[in-house]
Amino acid sequence: MAKYFIFFLCFSLVIVFIHASQESLSINPSTENIGSYKIEGKIIVPPGDNALENTRILIDEGLYIGIPQVDGTFVISGVPSGSYIVSVASPLHVFEPVRVDINAKGKTRARKVNFIQPGEVVTMKYPLNFETHGIPNYFQKREVYRLTDVIMNPMFLTLLVPLALLLILPKLASQDPEMQRDLQQASNFLQPNMNTPDIGDMFANMFGGPKKQKPTQSQNNGASGGISTAQQKRKIEAAKRRN
Image (cartoon, rainbow, N blue to C red; front, side):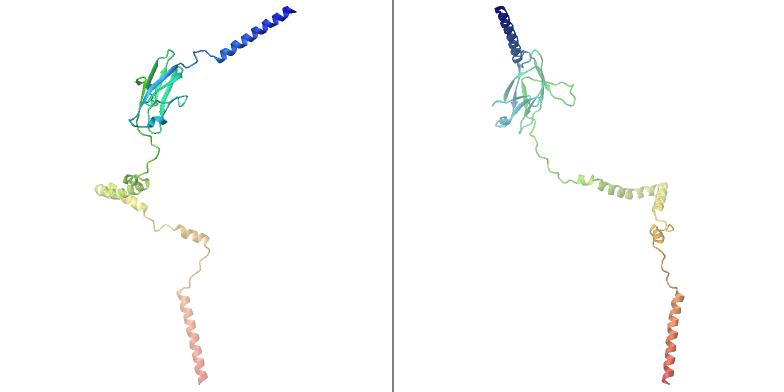
């Protein structure tokens, strides 16, 4: 019975030892995965400028963040080997980003970032030196009225081109008889034809109903003649009664 107890105790100790070793490996990974390199440089600003208070150094848009010292120098430690984009975020100045390559042996190389031609390599000095390249523009300038805006307006061009043709073509036509003949034919084609029926009258005749006929001149004369004869008869009867 004592033998079984000793065997069970030894077996339990072995299991506990294996479990503890696995936990130690998971908590303390190999030093190859820990970043043991650093990126350092300096931010150069005009003297008397307090922009460094709100300036931060970003590696890969915030994967690692560094804070500059009073003199502008910075050091970002714990960076593993690889390629990174180092940029400076400042509300008062604009800085160009830099690409930093760190190989497995810890050798660091810096070069300019070229998004248009990524294959073009322009090396830079290391440690890095960031210089200002202007002031950020947070506002859009108000547009100023210019004469060129009116001239280049499409509506103005549509009016200007026909006017120019009206002034230039007659002069050219006077020099070229053939062109003058073509212009005359074009003007005749554009003039309205008097023999062509009006569309409005055609629709009025089709849907407007029968028109009232005007009395002729003979009917008007007959009506006027009848009225004058009746008046004469009345005058004759009135004269007979008086007599």
